[in-house]
Image 1 (cartoon, rainbow, N blue to C red):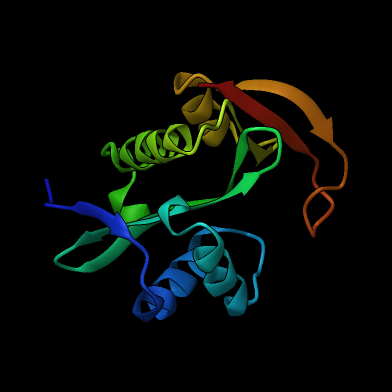
Image 2: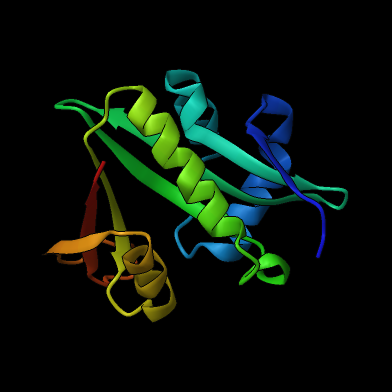
Amino acid sequence: MIKVYLRGFSQADLPLVYDLACKTLSEKYDPSLFISLSLSWPDGFIVVESPDGIKAFILGALLPNLQSRVLMLAVSPDSRRRGIGTMLMKRFLEESSKRGTRIVTLEVRKHNDAALNFYHKLGFLRVGVIGNYYNDGEDAYQMQRWL
């Protein structure tokens, strides 16, 4: 198993994080979004680094009414099924809890069974459907977990 460690995002990480997002997530994002969100809640943007570079990241936001939201979670294909996504999500839940969050929300493609199973194992429940959520028109499940 490769050695990895979790740490906060730094602006110098942007090229590698953006590249990972483009390779693993189907939506396309403006790179400036990563910087602006990292400034609004630095503890909600966590990367996983190995000797080979950044292998995963999670990016979230604080919302009103004691909520936080996972905006993106990406794990490089060569690092999947090794517990890295679980480590990231657990750290995100800890950081959310430190800020007084009571509910964590996220959206996931309706047909992404691997992600749905992953989030379900971490205690997330489906609470609704958002029609045409993604750029290609696919619906999303809205999921949440109470802390």
